[in-house]
Image 1 (cartoon, rainbow, N blue to C red):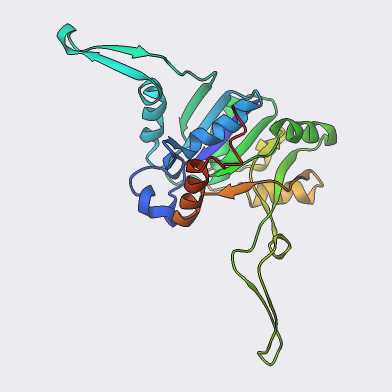
Image 2: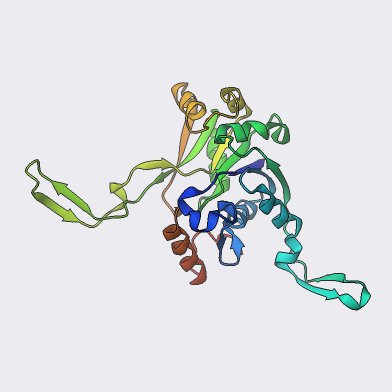
Length: 258
């Protein structure tokens, strides 16, 4: 099963770094968050990736074109005409198709544009800015067992701030720290889809989270795989710094690989 990753947006809410590189290429530790996402899938045996690019797509292409330079020791022998020798290559068992899906294409349009690389088969889809310790094998089995068109991973979003219970007279009836139950359930990505989903995508202007998923829900063809473990989206610099701290401290829950 192929894994499609949406990596073409502008990342405007983390513009401190995304003005130079695409958001999926912002680094957690010494590797882009895109690499972290791919390592999650690879841990479960899914190694065929299709990257939907747009904004500064050449950065992603150059990263994979020069992957050995990023992960290995190199000797440049200028006495022999600049000959390059790669030592201790740390290769991945990946096949990576990087597709320029357009600068202003919406999420659904990006998925539609890579259909020829997916073929007429089920596939997985996720966002290029979210990491999780979700068990991909259990997710896929859940999808296969219910037999419907689409599965998304449902995340209980935690409130970031304390909670106030305020009366109509502006009296604070209760003040307490946030709990997981105070947040809403959201689409955390990590989706599994049947090829019939393509029929619900009209073109480049289609937002995947609007008509395709909404219509699948109306038809009773959208299922939620509940994940109560770790999930974190890198939407702002605050998010990036939190992920960075976990990675540097050796406490990153999404690092399911060895």
